[in-house]
Length: 253
Image 1 (cartoon, rainbow, N blue to C red):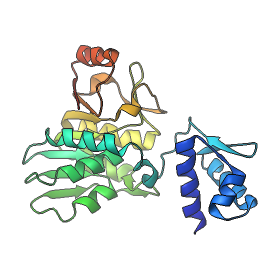
Image 2 (cartoon, rainbow, N blue to C red; image 1 turned 90 degrees about the vertical axis):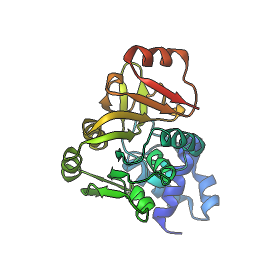
Image 3 (cartoon, rainbow, N blue to C red; image 1 turned 180 degrees about the vertical axis):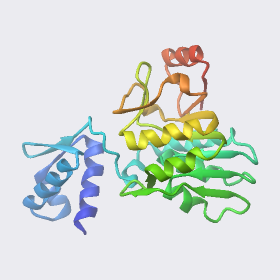
C-alpha cells in the first residue's frame, strides 16, 4: 500500500471515529508505529488532525477541504434523497449550475432522464458522470485543478461562471447556521459558490441534515441569499420558521 493511500484511510478513520491510536493503526496497516507517527505528523501539518498522546484527534476547526473520496462516504443515503428531490425541480431544457460537492454528483446521476439540459460545473466528477449523456451541453469551467478535491477553482473558473445566466444553481456547503448563514471551509471554494449564486435566477441549497446548526470558516451567503433549501429530513421548527420568515421554500422527504 502506498503511503498516500494509507494516510487517506487514516484520515477517513479519524473522521469516522474522531480519534485514532498509533498502536492500533500500526497493527491495522502492518507497519511500524514510527511510520504511523510520521503519517500523523503529515496529516497534522496539512491541518486535518491534532496529535495527542499515543494518537491523534480530528481538527474540527480546520478550514481545509477533505479529499473527495472521504467526503463521498459521508451520509450517502441523505444525499441520494436530496438528489431525488432535486430531480423534480429540474425541467427539460433548463440551464443549471452544479458545484463540486459530493451531493452534486448524486444530483447529476439522478438527472440523466432529463432532456436537453445545459450543465455548467467546476466538478471533475460531474464531468466524468455526464460525459456520455446524449443531447446535453455540459460546460466545464476550466481553472486550477485542486488536488484531492476533484474541482476546478481560481480566477479562470470564476470568470467562466460569471459569463453565463443560468436558470438554477444547486450547491452544497459545510454548514448552515441561523445567524452565520451558509458557510464553507475556505474562501477559495466559497468564492466560487458566490459566483454560482450570482449567475443563477433561482438558488437552491442542497444540504443534508448533518450540516444544520454548523458554521465553517468562510461565509458564502446569508439565508436571504437562498430561494430553496432541499434536505433529507424535516428540519426542526426553528428552521422552518426561519425559512418561512426569509421567504425560503424548504423541500424535504
